Amino acid sequence: MKKLWVVLMLLPTFSLVFLLNLYPLVRGGVISFQRLTVFNLNNPRYVGLANYETILRDPNFPRILWNTLVWIAWSVSLQFIFGLILALLLEKPFKGRGAYMGFVFYPWALSGFAIGLLWSWLLNGQFGVVNDLLVRMRFIKVPIGFLSDERFAMMSVILVNVWYGIPFFAIMLLAALQSVPRELYEAAQIDGAGFFQRLFGITLPYIRPTVVSTILLRIIWVMNFPDIIYGMTRGGPAGVTTILSVQMLNVVYYRNNFGLASALGVIVTAVLLAFAVVYLSLLEKGEFEL
Amino acid sequence: MKKRKVGTIFRVVALSLYLVFAVFPLAWIFLTSIKPATEVYTFPVRYLPSRPTLEAYRYLFSFARFGVYFKNSFIVTVVSAGLSTVFAVMAGYVLTRERFKFREVLVLVLFFVQMLPTYLVMIPLFTMFSRLKLTNSLVGVITVYTSFGSAFGTIMARAFLRNIPKDIEEAAMIDGCSKPGALLRVVVPVLLPGIGAIFSFCFVNSWNEVFTAILFLHSDHKMTVPVALYSFVSKAGIQWNVMAAGLVVALVPTICVFAFAQRYIVQGLTQGALKG
Image: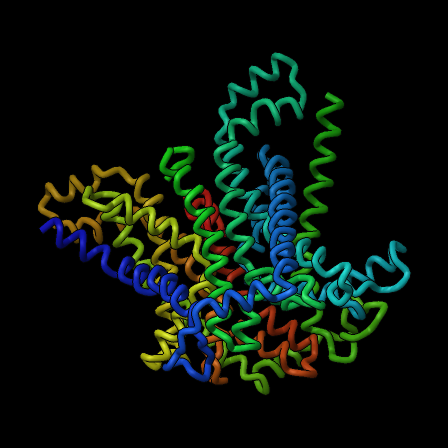
């Protein structure tokens, strides 16, 4: 009786999860050894390691890996720093804090792709408002091609990603900050500790588990977040903003080469699995709450 | 005392600057959407329209058939979020209340799936669904979104259910209530804030999903809003005031959901639902 109850209750979620989330992951591995395009969907041909060879022979591939690293490192570290600053600013209650949080946290709910498109208009090289403001404030004389100039494109997409990701970090860190026992601060107050001594001596060590888990998850998430780049540049100009996930999308949408895209997917999955093992083992060890 | 005052001033200035930074992009896209086409492409930029107009929105809903895309998006989002929420509460309930074999393994599976981005499995899903003739259909997309939604919804449901004491169901069961009866009549009413949070999460994720939708939905009358925006970019000669209007239409629903459910969403985020 109890067994039937448990099985029936789990059935919808887990049949969907196994059939549509986990099985396709394995299936993607199989497709990566096939020549499969939109035109031969029903009779794929096995080609061994040919897709992987294509990727490794691609002279742009090291560049794509490097771009992915740059994208993750800058995005996550800046999101963390500004998220922490925002959380610290919001820690003490003040009148209208709830409303303020609503206004600054809303980007969390927005579509990354739409945000990319939106910012591509703000950063437009001819008619963009950011250029207009910079010219008016006399920082620059002529408009900058933020998205068309190879020197600025990566910086631009990262800054938009930071804009988008600050709220998430701030929410997580604010909750963690509020869990720090007041007594710890009172003791520090008596000892005459300053702001930075308190921050590095008490606050950060206390919230370390949240910081570690949030950053770890964020790295995985940002690596697999082509949405903003896809809205802004689709990987251009000249591939300078092409990260692994963007490359995979371009191979799917422009070249319709599902086999090659799946091989790229396997590479992404391998990195994802490595992170998942670290993260889930930390969970198991009780480093942070499961 | 003086030090504290400096601190307060710094805080007010910093928070005000950040507020402008956070809100300005959205305000700007709205301003662009109510400009006449002639005032969009100027430099130096014209900040306020000489006469606000809805011509971009009119174009959007007549020539660009945005009404159809909006309806498609709405159906896909509400159905998948609704199903995910029901499935998540069911699974989350037994995962917190019952002890059985493989329970921990199943929870780990959910945490893993939560890290899985949709785009990574969309090709195998496309080949599977094309055999079932479900690729160019809203049902196919709904099924995919429901699978991801149920997985992270269950994690959220677990977090909320752990805070609800077991006693209330036990009391009901002593009074002769069956297990499903206790869940429906006793637990669900207490869980409503959690259910709201799960639904809002799934709503936001489904409404915003773009890459599977681009691959799956290719005929014009099946497109969702993000797919329509994607096809806008490829179309030559799209005016930016029309694009801006499309973006406003794409962004407003999730902003509304966020406004209504902000408190629960924040709770859900910090209680273990970790999807950004």
